[in-house]
Each structure stands twice: as C-alpha cells, then as structure tokens.
Amino acid sequence: MNLLKLADIFFEILHLSLIGFNLMGWLFKSTRRANLYTLGATFLSWFGLGLFYGIGYCPLTDWHWQIKSKLGITNLPNSYITYFLENWLGLHIQPQIVDIATFAFFFFSLCVSVYLNIIRKK
Image 1 (cartoon, rainbow, N blue to C red):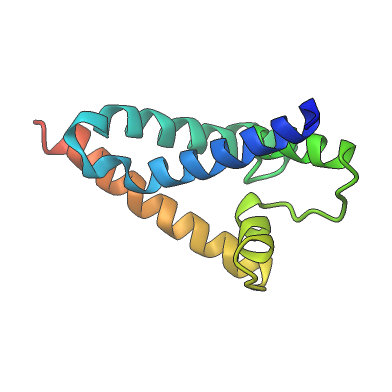
Image 2 (image 1 turned 180 degrees about the vertical axis):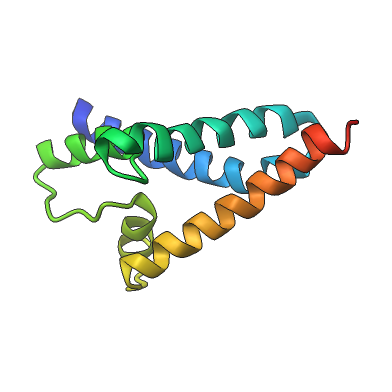
C-alpha cells in the first residue's frame, strides 16, 4: 500500500473521529473540556478561515481532498459529511440539507458543551 492510500485512510479515520468527538465528547466529564476546544477550533475554521476560503471551510477536508485528487478521485463534494453519506452509506441527500443538518448538530453540541463547561460550572 502506498503512502497516499495510507494518508487517505488516516484522514478518513481522523475526520470520523473528530466528527464523533464534536458530537458526543460532551457526554463524558473527562472529555468535556477537550470537546469544547475542538468545537471552538471547528467554529473558528468554519467561520474564521471561512471568511477567506468560504464559510464552512475545513482544512482537514482540504488536505484530504488534495490526497484523493492525487489518487485520481475527482468530483468531490465541498463537505466531507456529504461525501461520507454518499460513498460510505449510499445516501444521496442534497448538499444544502446536509450542510443545514451538520450546522444544527454542531450548534446543539456547542450549546451543550458551553453549558456543561462554563455555565453549569458557575
């Protein structure tokens, strides 16, 4: 197996792990602070870097798509989640709906994490 294929697998695992942790890291007291940090980094990426690269920009997706491009995989969607739903689960959902659902789940997790890490601690 070549290095590009290993990098592709690495980014699949990293993406899915980060998404899962962003969505559920607040569940466990021991991971709540780290969850708040990863949600904050995601927010800064989507809306900070997003000012320069387009709202919702994710450097992980950018790097991952560069690797996939070198592997000859083209016509990738803007969103990793859209890619995952289509290529791993066989679900074809309009990208706009995926983006809205992604933000809704993210916002819910962010609100819960802020509550548990900051508001409830006071």
